[in-house]
Image 1 (cartoon, rainbow, N blue to C red):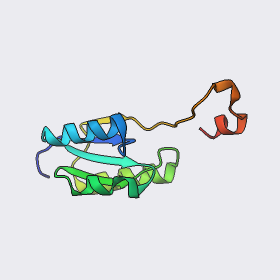
Image 2: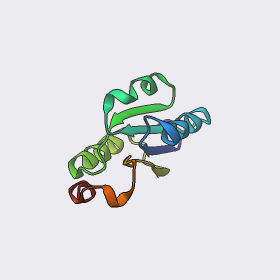
Image 3: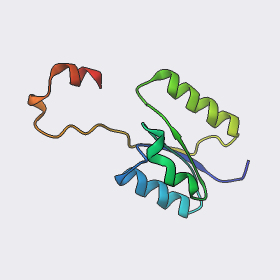
Image 4: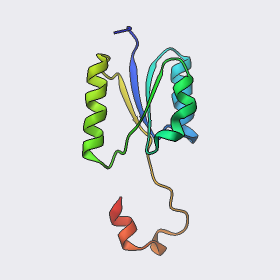
Length: 103
């Protein structure tokens, strides 16, 4: 491919994930920036060294499509930064069991 080392980063739309995407892209790494919602990645699509796409890490079919896409690029992966997470403000004890079982 292009000789770059490629890194896949989940949870890339904001915060630490976004900062990591931008830092690695600036340092010359190729970055697969992913997030639950594709629209949250629109601005990253315009940055050199970044390929942004939607990825729900809790959906096996979605993960399979991401793997297929990466294989098709011929880049392989140098690293994975699994930054995706959920935001549930408040005490854990106050969350309904159904919400905890979802994740």
